[in-house]
Image 1: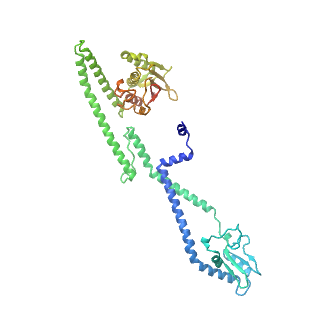
Image 2: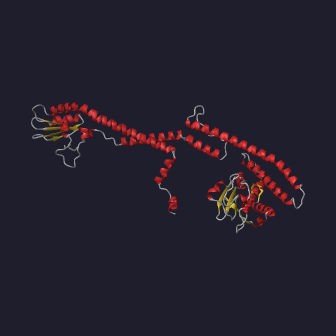
Image 3: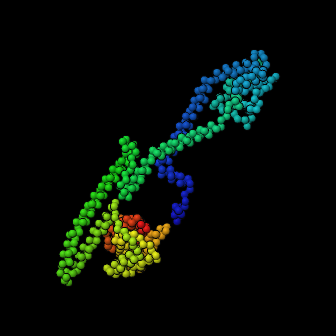
Length: 466
């Protein structure tokens, strides 16, 4: 019970996303593309940063030390006190900061910027320089700090305010990445669009529609998907030819069998009507009638299964036609007189092929009668309006027999299929009745459905207004 409730519970968004990702080749390719792009970008940036931070730092250290020495000499010439005016002129010319501290002069070029403190005397809340980038305190102080002979300390740093902040650069970069991702997605979608054509073509071939082959891009030089489409088209053409040959052979055999069956029936009817021969004569006539009916059903099914199934439509009252079929069945099968007809009032008159709809009703009722011989309730035939405006009709035939297993329901309307359980072969039939009913419904543009009514089986046919 809990498992059924879990299955019925709607999936969350992340579960739907995982299912879509697992079932979509396009999404998986895009995910691989994004991961690859991020991996390449991260590897390149990290490698470049490492190369610049290590290689260029070692190469630039002596140049930086010499440059800071020259700046210190300009600010405090030999034997003189550091001059804030000289330091101010240097900071106006260069994007640097200068801090002077000592017994006589204490001056900062940019007092608004935080002063860099070193590890030996920095408070706990001051951010420490990264040793990976700058080395230890001694090396760093040797690069950017100088001490004069009179005890003044000159410290040089970068002026952060001189560097223009560009916060929109990140947004521009992200937008460019999204645009590139969108372009890549559109290209992958266009590249894999033949997969949709192949899927739709395979569905058409599976439904027996071989008239429209799968489109192939660049037939002169197709890619792998184009070659796959060409292969499937060739397979569909071969299957179509095989089915057409099988249909032609079946029609030819059925036509050829009609003449010997007619002669056999005639010769059987000419046998003497004596008490000794009568039982064998009646049994032979029944077998010949069953064979003739089988051949007629085969021919009719092949006509309806063909691409150009012609219907002789005429205005038909469904309720009156159903009563005629029940009366005809009652003439040969006494059990048919118990069929309960439930026809709605004011049923619409539809343009139907009377002969084929009569065949549909007869097969449905005959099938229901055969499989509900010992049922406590009679067969029911319901005819009611269907469709949004009620212009079509719905025909439902239900028996109260044993029914069939649920896993065999999808195969009941296939040719020559008979379940081997409660509705056994002892009940008669060769498995063409429901198949022929489905073809009649589809030829009229309707639908055919089978379900277990518990008890019994219910077959529902919908016929549109025209």
